[in-house]
Amino acid sequence: MQTIRRAHAVQPVAALQSEYSLWWREPEAEILPTLEELGIGFVPFSPLGKGFLTGKIDENTTFDSADFRNIVPRFTPEARKANQVIVDLIGKVAERKQATPAQIALAWVIAQKPWIAPIPGTTKLHRLKENIGAVEVELAPDDLREIENATSQITVQGARYPENLQRLVGR
Image (cartoon, rainbow, N blue to C red; front, top):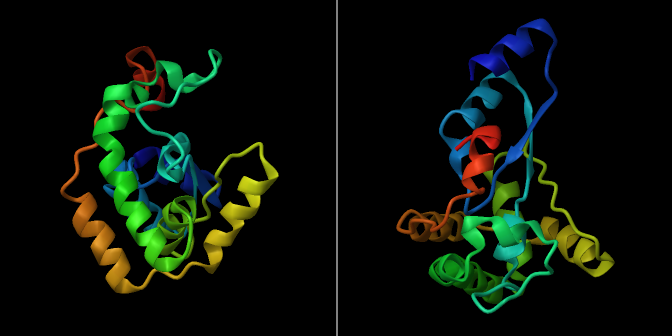
């Protein structure tokens, strides 16, 4: 957080970009409070957990040989099977809200703070339209409590990145 503070003291920082989603919540510990204190926006990448939180990936999914997820420990079949509990939770909320799991995952990120603007990546127009629909999904306080209570009981399986990249991306 000292780096953010030092940078902001030299030149006001408008926004910080980092990974944040229902299965990578590390920024909540120190980054988000620092950004809030300093009035800096947050632009989380991978708010859909590299596609996993959309409900379109399971333990049997195979990726193209060039797909980065092939080397990510969190995307081993065993980790995907263990982490399916998060997707099931999101799917349950999505069904109740008449939304897609992707929209719920994005709506959750958006609901955390008004100065958070997630940037989900996609190469497909229909996914872009689906993602935009997340702004129409209203997660009530009870929905957010349900998600928080359930996810606080879940330990995500698999490292976020391969060991050789962990030093570069942090944790």
